Amino acid sequence: MKQEQTALLQGTLDILILKSLLAGELHGLGVSRRIHQLTGGTFSVKPGSLFPALHRMEEEGWISAFWGDSENNRRAKYYRLTKAGRKQLEVETQKWGRISSAIARALEAS
Amino acid sequence: MPLLAKARNFFRNLFFFDGRDNDLDQEIRSHLEMLIDENIRAGMPPGEAQRAARIELGGSEQVKEQVRDLRIGNWLHSVASDCRFGLRQLRKNSGFTAVAVATLALGIGANAVVFGVLNALVIRPLNVPHAESLWGLERGSDNAVNQSYPDYLDLRDRNRSFEDLAAYNVTSVGLDTGNNPSSAWILETTGNYFDALGIQPYLGRFFHASDEHGPNSAPYIVLTYAYWHSHFQDDRGVVGRTVQVNKHPFTILGVAPPEFRGTLLIVFPDFWVPIVNQEQVEGTNVLNARGKPRHFDGAWTPQGGRYSGTSCCRSQLDWLISGKDLPER
Image: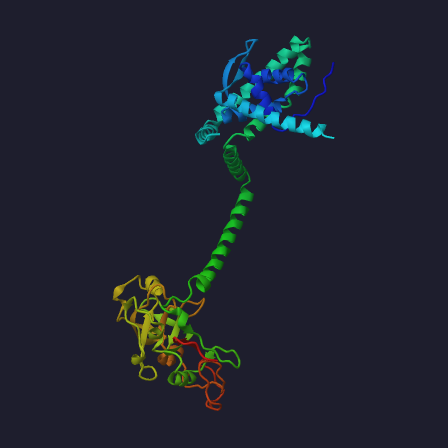
């Protein structure tokens, strides 16, 4: 079954990355696969968007990076949420809630 | 982002760029390898698995560049890289470099000349006290700035509008200080010139109206500071020394202050001599030559026919007027 892929909305990549790391640390590919899984295959993040976002968020202090071994014993760079990252996820979640309910209301209006 | 974290990232990106870049390189490579592993696990043959992984990655260099682009302080690093690249190119294309350097040199030189003129005209105009109350006097009828000496004397004696009235004329002479004769630009001025301008000598004294006692009575020289510096090596014993101006002995009275370089706009004279010695300086006596009858459109209007001289105008003098009042029109 082929899922329909949708372009990511501006600003939604951060929230998806933060959310995907909430359960535990992941490397880049893991983040990508987790987002794919979390969104039921609707969003698939390409490395060209993923890595800039990861590095930017690391500079922001929302996530921290460290080198570890992957499930296949390859060295991989892992990311985990920081305290600031958890807070940021809350902020973004609230924001997204407002946006989505507002859009939904607007579309339901007759 | 807190300022401290921002600063830390900035310095980390700037000074540990190579380390950061190696890190990024490894991360992308391990990402690619994990993609290949994934594809092989999904049952792809190794060649196909690699191809598919590369397609998904979409060009590791592009990804790395995208990451670098958003780092804090990246612009500074790229400026440095551009500079290094530029220098390498300059070294490689020496012909182009020579032309570019020559072009720049000419451009800068031309600008320096323009600035020199601007400096003389606008930025450092006449450097005397109360320059705002100095007026140049022109004849109204034909816009000529030059007047004859007898006309000057008439105007000076009948002047009631200005404190003083001085005249000068620019010419070039041969100066012999004893070893190497050279030509020099000078101003022949009336005796009251320095007093009318209200300036004080840097060294020795100026000549005054009281030094003038008829034609060739005041064989004196006042040097500009620049000429004293370049031709007399700042020798303070120069005062009282006798030199030859066009083979006539003249005595050096003093040196003008450094900031005063004469009353002409672009030509800076080398020294001043009293205009009563004009015959010695120029070889012919034109001081008594009268200009055409004229109407003066300035401070003072002579009666018609007051000037009844001939048409000889060889002694053409620039006027300089010093005074506190604007002329009434």
